[in-house]
Length: 424
Image (cartoon, rainbow, N blue to C red; front, side, top):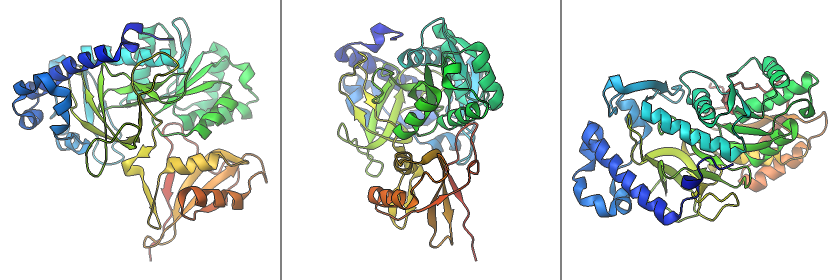
């Protein structure tokens, strides 16, 4: 379903004109209302004709800029215009706080409604929302977008997994929203309760907040009897709904370009890469009032696909998130992303989708161990998986099979990389 046909299928030339108008507004709004940007943007009046072409001349905004101006140093409106706050967990350092005006919340609900339509949901259906409610943007973001669309919401939040399954049985929702790792745990819980996919009415799963592979997609689709699609967002830009995979194509996430201006840069040179090349996603908000973001470095590594999509949407797509630049692991001098390991592991017969990457040994020369469970006892050929990992990654990784249930289950974002290193 296309929620806003006029905007989502807009001719590219008209869309680019709209982007220029909104980009011009954003730059002037930020310059006039945020001291941080006033110092950076200089004389914008000369930019009006070629603003999008000259955008790359501006400095990039980083997460550290939000931390340095914690909590509200980048606010562009008076406090009495704020209607909601969200914040990051702070697991990678000082948390970041983001604020929303009434207009910002309406815009956010709109892009989430579009996302749910791309997933195949329709007004009158029901969504079980198992994203956490609170300062994390996932729960309330999906909730408001569903209500905007006319979709009933079961605000289950995270946790209470057996109760989640019972809700599916009792209320028969059409869609499930959760992190993919938690959805996997829900599928295991269903099996332990004797509930099969035929007992529930789920048609689609909307999964995000962590990188996941096509192998994980296959596991989720088979174990839940659904179509699994990817949703992308980040709180600094708005939350979930920045980009969404359509159920028809499942071949990249459509960015809602009337609200977000897209660039992809080389993380080292900071120059834009050619279309189709891997680089870091950089986003500029085009209508955000409370905390406009200009050339924000997401840290997410993507490729842009501008080819037409079977669904009819005209926006560019980003390939599934390859990983985060700060998630990269260096194993014996070789750069490895956890998502690459997951792709290989889940493509190996006999491997379950429950795995963890464990640093062991001495910090001066650590080993990375792939610790995983089997789909059934004796089903996994460890040596074969080790060879496949070496062929794909050009580095040797130890493979260790552990008893069923030993890999920790997630009720939110999965912790895939842990350390058990021992110093002298």
